[in-house]
View 1: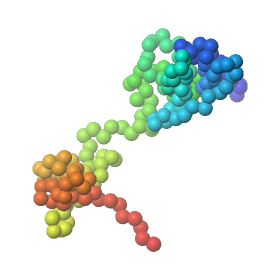
View 2: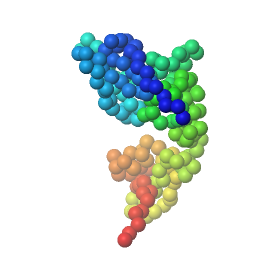
View 3: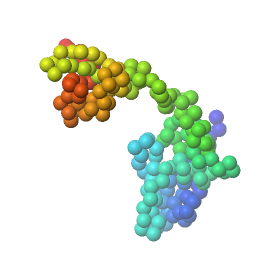
Length: 187
């Protein structure tokens, strides 16, 4: 495999101050000293750097800087896709412009995002938590796959059940509600 050459270009809007490389590295040119910036990860896992101009700092995602400097976007697509699905791989060869729809479909294809659970409740929805219904004297009455399922079966308001589950109410609809927490194995 042929070794890729690292190419440097000015960061658009920060010409002569910062440069971005085709490998996704950012360097400062301030004071005549070239320095590679470390940056940090966003809460969503993207790599970002803070660039300063006229004493004002602004954060930029590195993949956006690479794409703007190196990829022609004739179709004016709004998203930048990481082809291999790795958000920190900001190499030019791993980036492409795409639509929001193309970006979502790509994430589903790679398994990075689970399909929406629209219309699926209780045990059929991976994000649901099972809830238990008890009488005020502590007798078990029923188990539901989710708070919504309990509401549908008891006609007790979902917000009331939810507040009882979180401890803000002692009961809801005359019943005590608890999450069905998995039991840990004993030694």
